[in-house]
Image 1: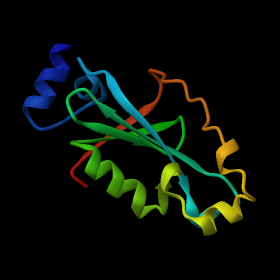
Image 2: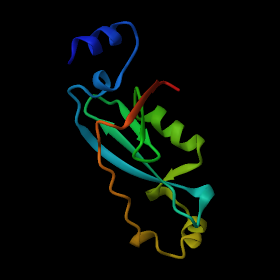
Image 3: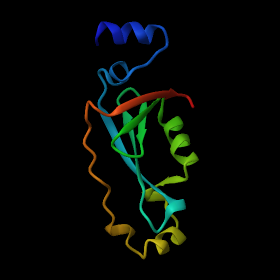
Length: 120
């Protein structure tokens, strides 16, 4: 890890470099905004090898969290639900195409903005 990232983290400032250092994604879960149905607005939640998580509504900004629970709260507050937990009414609004849905392909780029929210 770069010296600056280590120094910032020691003072409680978590930047993108220190958040992701040494981690690998162990789970990726796609969420859909149920409030916007039948339009599809996607969000992604990733859980990392150390238990931390990140969440994103698009490819431009990613939010970091201490663990999955806080990332789920964050997405839930914006009326998103995991695709696997959409109910029958949600499925009807998708005209029965839930099984045919495929999430977007987002490329992880160094240019993506990062904001650490910790335990929001």
